[in-house]
Image 1 (cartoon, helix red, strand yellow):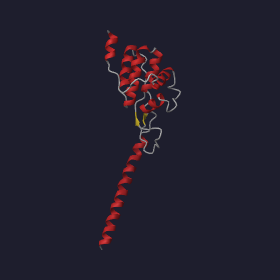
Image 2: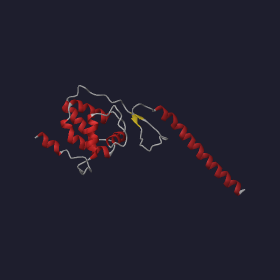
Image 3: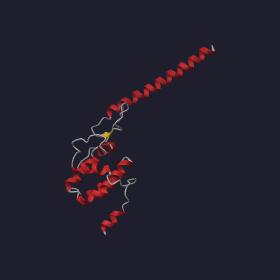
Image 4: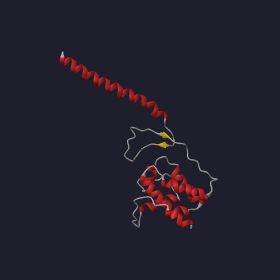
Amino acid sequence: IGLFYLSHVSFNVCLSHQLVTGMCQAAWRPAITGLVSSRGYRGDSPEDTKVDLIEIPLPPWKENPSEPIDIKRRRLLYESRKRGMLENCILLSLFAKRYLNTMTENQLKQYDRLINEPSNDWDIYYWATEAQPTPDVYQGEVMDMLKEFTKNRNHEQRLDAPSLEYLEKENQ
């Protein structure tokens, strides 16, 4: 009787685990398929098998053609510094420090689209480091500048985003 009881308990535990796991997976499936969007955070990397793909929908990026240039530069500076990952915070904030104030209106539009339309910061990072090919829609003068900047040919120490003290010096 003791052996029967142990095997019966073991069977029930195993069955319960399978039922709960199955219900959890079944409960997630509709949510996963219902969230597919053309623009969303995918959480992918080059090695990702996409088995656990969940897309979180994001609002579409829209260019604001009536935004004054000085406001656009300030917004892009802020958005260059506040990214979803540290690598891009450092890379894009240093890039913005070097180039943002000298960019033409067309270059500002390219940069705005580049840092705001893709929903995954890793995409931008992989394109800038040339680990993945840049989609044609983002390839242009600014992307070329970013790729060259990323190569860091002068071997600058890039460990953190720059302080904003340089802005005060420019305004004096």
